[in-house]
Length: 291
Image (cartoon, one colour):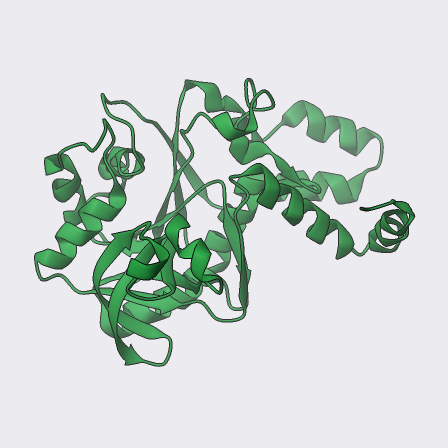
């Protein structure tokens, strides 16, 4: 079996970026000339995904518009001879088969958009990637965990080493046993542990391959502080005896564009590496008087 579908939750309010996200989805914040969510979709497509299931809300129409055709704009570009730009925007709508589902329900929490995808996923294993963060890796992160899935089946979660001990409390940390280099069988995910209580320094987040059984588990979860969490569903999946693996991502860098500081770092880094204006940006930064 191959993984054909990815679920991309993009229904959150983006309150950390207010007021910018009052009328614009946080997933549409640009990193140079592409919105964050386009990097996520491009990674999925490069990994062989055919169907992209976006979980959105009423305030997220801009995401649907971005991945749709815009005939008036296309005509404008054609009339003015901007062939490069014309091909660029046409390609966006052709990336994948896009399916949009609006999240509904009483509870919040990152398991709820996954559950919302149930009608579109059906009875097959599927991938999940968040719409406000991405990893640049060769081969793509999702492709790497797909290889683990093909070899071991079960569920698979991408994993990243946390170099600073003080930072482990920001992530779900794996209690695990080694299967082979870079691949681990997860016994439990400890959510945001204190540094001295972390079972490892391997953070499990970002991309998942999950079985359809996860939907029934989510439906039975009790909320914590009014929220339903995917980590609780995955731990229940592990307790049921279902194998869950961690795949340490190779040749990759994680960009947490869901918070202001890391978003700005990402924009600066991409600007410094951009072939069209990296030299100009570097020269400008040298003129700044930094304390």
